[in-house]
Amino acid sequence: MSLVIHGLGTAHPPDAVTAEDGLRLARHLAGPDVRTSTWLGPVYAHSGVSRRHQVIGGAVVQDVLAGTTLSGSPFLPTAANDGVGPTTAERMRVYAAEAGPLALRAAAAAVAESGFAPDSFTHLVTVSCTGFAAPGVDLALIRGLGLRPTVERTHVGFMGCHGALNGLRVANAYASADPAARVLVCAVELCSLHYYYGSAADKLIANAIFADGAAAVAGAASQDPTRGAGSSWRVAATGSCLIPDSAGDMAWAVGDRGFEMTLSRRVPGLIAGAVRPWLDRWLGDSGLSLADVGSWGVHPGGPKILSAVEAGLGLPADALAASRGVFADSGNMSSPTVLFVLDRLRRSNAPRPCVALGFGPGLVAEAVLFR
Image (cartoon, rainbow, N blue to C red):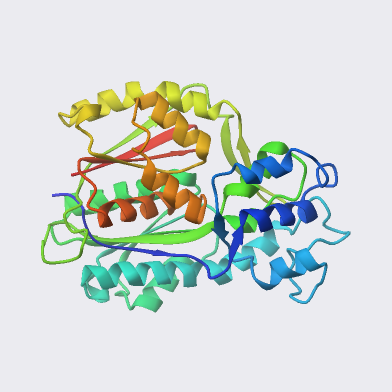
């Protein structure tokens, strides 16, 4: 027994920011040392992101660009928060208000495609690293979908961009242990809440690529080919690899002015050097080689991350087209992003076996093999 996908749903906030407007925002919000810098423009121009959906959008963006305060948002620049932005408490209040409704939209779409009755789900797995609230997203899903009050809940928290793959591992464990299991996995991230207002280059680069979104998977322990367009996608194996001597190269910490990300320039090289030896061994355990993989669902952490995976694995230029497409259309939404990629692959009938990959703080690589 293993988890089979019967439904997959995705959702964005309604407001989006283009790369051009993103640069204009950065000119207003970045620390005073970089507002007139010459290097900030190329960061946005070459980010690979056409637009990013954000819960902090619409009226707030208009206020920042026009120098007005009509929205009354704590995210507006003031003399008091210049170079630092809102407090973490102010950011978390927005998370508590916005994460549940966005997650509910994605989960409702996954449940609808699966054809499963909401009260038939036995397990609920939630994934998020961009906020904390209790009761939180799990309660919003139970109430909003009409899940049974006895649904067994598990939260995968603060694991970063590969969190959805960890969530699928948990769901697969439930499905493998119980042939009657029906599992709903929902990942939601509001990365825009942690917009950085200072002058550190690596954090300003993160501002240009991170976005908000949610994605959900409805799965069951056994396959019913009559249910759902993606019902044949089955979790065959999961894997994890801690890359040595990299703990300081990708990190995610709770600060007084939001959650603070560290991304060193070594990350692409570390990934390129580690990914093939690990995958050769891991795929070998399933009787496969790299040449047997029919498609790749790689989390688009950024253009250099995708190029590093291509180089490390010797993949052809179009192998990560789905990842680059999602990145261009939606940016890096952290944990839900790889599910957006998988949804694009399965709806295009991409060949299998398919390997989904994600990278997060540690530096850790996570993988899921789909048959």
